[in-house]
Structures are given as C-alpha cells and as structure tokens.
Length: 164
Image (cartoon, rainbow, N blue to C red; front, side, top):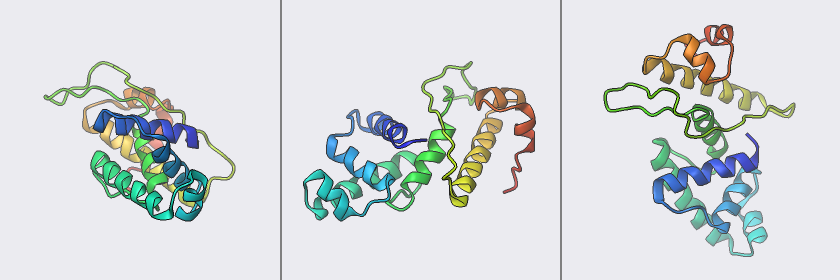
C-alpha cells in the first residue's frame, strides 16, 4: 500500500465513522507519519506549530483506535492501516445472522510490494493475511472462496500457517 492509497483508505475510514472527510491538516499529519517524519518536521511542512500537529495526530489516533478496535498511534499507524487495508480488500456485507452477502464488493485496495520492504513489514503483511483468512473462515467461506476474495491461489491459502 503506498502513501496515497493509505491516505485514501484513512479518509474512507474517517468518513464512515464521522460523515466528514479528512481536511488538509489531517491528511498532512497522516502523510508525515507514514513517511516517518517527526512532528516538528510535519508542522513545518504544514505551516503550523508542533503542538498543533501533535493535537491533530492525537485526535486522529483516537478516532482510528475507535474505528479499528485497537490502539492506534504514531508508531503503529502504518502497520494498522496495512493490516486493516488488506482485510478490507474485498469487504462483504455480513448480515445479523452471520451470513455473508454474495460478493457485494464495497471497496478495494491494491497492495504493492517493494524491494525496500523490511522484515518487520513482511511479518505484518503475513499476519494480515492470516487474520483475513481466519475472519473469512469464521463467516463460513470455503478455501476456494477465500482464495478468490483475496486474489490468491488455493495452494497459497492452504500453505498459510494459521498458527503464527
């Protein structure tokens, strides 16, 4: 997931939660964090004080924490967006009885690979695959259906070590 895709996904999450899109300052803080910048550098790029950039960040981390059901902060934003983005590659409507709507795709993200991916990033990506597979199994999808949803081969689905 590149920075622009991450920003678009973050905007979708915020809009779904609040009914409002991210403003330029919020987008700037998220972009700076994804580029591993310090708040002082982010603030300089946004022509605001470091304290104001931190305040915006704090509000965003609270909002994302609430939306994702896990703590989100400056240090884990990238991995959370990646994990949640992969899980949301193909969202399905889940009805109150736990049944999955037949392939109603709400949105999609392209996850791009790069030679610059760190071992930590690759482990996070693997964990995200495992979580996605487990969630889809939990709602009753077959390995064949999961492979189709995640654009993976059936062999890849069966090779994923779900015990990690």
